[in-house]
Image (cartoon, rainbow, N blue to C red; front, side):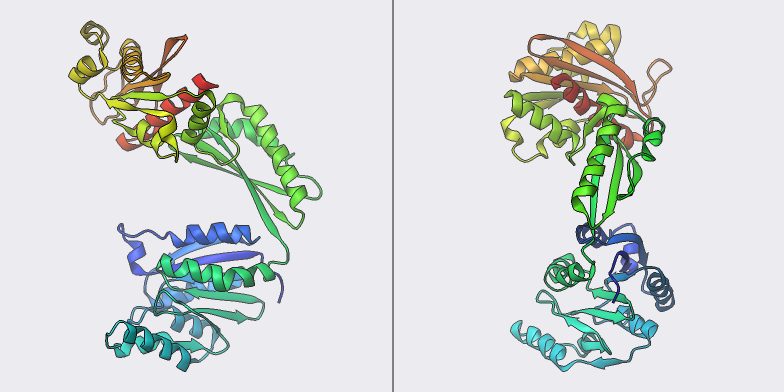
Length: 419
């Protein structure tokens, strides 16, 4: 069999096409396959319809070295994956006595009668290797079809993940031909996707060399832009060297808007800066209502450098809890640089923090004006031994998107103040 270098993942289940269920298995599989040197080229989600599933399996087998399906291995009539794969491969299904015995034993241990329909889970296509599932009744299957491999997993992650690690990962590692995929990510805050691309695009063509090809992808999410660099091959040292060179070139070109090149999120970067200084941080939040504190405290160990925060949504809280002067509110309004400064100064003093951030803004959809439109945020940073600074910014998007931007901007303001 030729080495396995490309893969497609098919998540099976009509419930995954609703707003109530998300396919998380493919995220786990994509990460683990990359570590094994197998590049996921496509993912699909398909409902419990025989014809649709058969068409997607056929298409995936025509393109990829490895096809992985998740779900559709249960005992009910809408669990079609093993039947459809057998049909596509033109392999008859036969009942495996060992699987049936294991399923029956599982019900006996629970002192429950096994429904007859569970016998369907003992059906195996000719030539398939059975993958034991100690956490459920549905075994997995490994089927080789010429120079292709198709692996069938049950849908529950608590069943899929240990099966992958125990039964599939070692076999894939042996079949990947010593190939590896290496990745680096450059994370940016403070520039739009098009601005980052304009600066980065001229660098793309010089990232690789004769030995190593470096591929790049830009990804925009609220609050940050990511540049993903990847290289595939069997010379890990050469790939790492080219990726490190590419990261260095992009970091030099983009400047201080780059906040991470080692995988850390913005809150982790801020936390590491605080820990290195031995400082503690506080936050006074109006429009973000605790989102900055939530991100900071998502980081393990944050109790070493987070003091706390005040959600000062109403003006009376700004007055009573942060000591904001009522005259500032009357003269400048709650969304203003003087008020943001007073909020940051107030929370730093009252919580005895070394550095503090104040955030006030208009997330929308109402409340804006010509002078202060929806999407306006004011961020102030107060720190020991330096004047308190404030900055007014504008962000697009609906209420949730704007608030995500606001919280990221507040964290980035802390990062810059700590740099």
